[in-house]
Image (tube, rainbow, N blue to C red; front, top):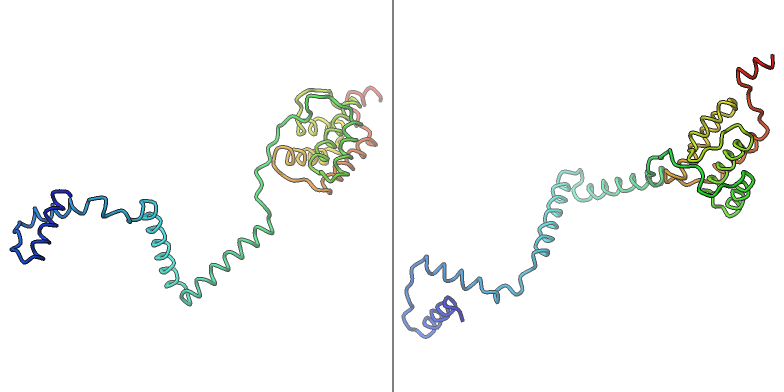
Length: 229
């Protein structure tokens, strides 16, 4: 037993036995009691620091709702109606707009390291489309478009070319398809680098563009047209 504990216990025993209590001044008595109560045995059942923090947090939340319910029309019932309305609005916006998508990033390389022909890219695109893997189908069809333009000498084969660069360069000899080429490049970038999800309509748009480009004759350059005249 500690000195302070012995003193307090002795004082209690003396009081219980009828013996005259031991007199002690206020400050030493307060200090002795403080030392006695600081003994860990008195704090075994105290809540932990985390529990005390959580209790304070929930007290704060409770007071916040109490204040809000007092200010809201209709009291607690009115506050509940407002909360439900806000949740319903958020759910409606989420359903209407879908999961937020990251901003599309352009500038990634169009082709991988293994060169393939336009026909091979088309075959791969159709296989992905048959399995409803629209992201891969869109990617392979865009690669087929650019490879076909390279095979027709409308684009110079160049490693590291991006879809945007290919669309811009191909738009010069094919001005009538320039807008569709740029749209196809944006679709490729959105799917490949922007985290977007393609669908059947996106793939069919690129497939139709690919077929139309095969039937489109390039515009003659000014120099070639002048020489022909």
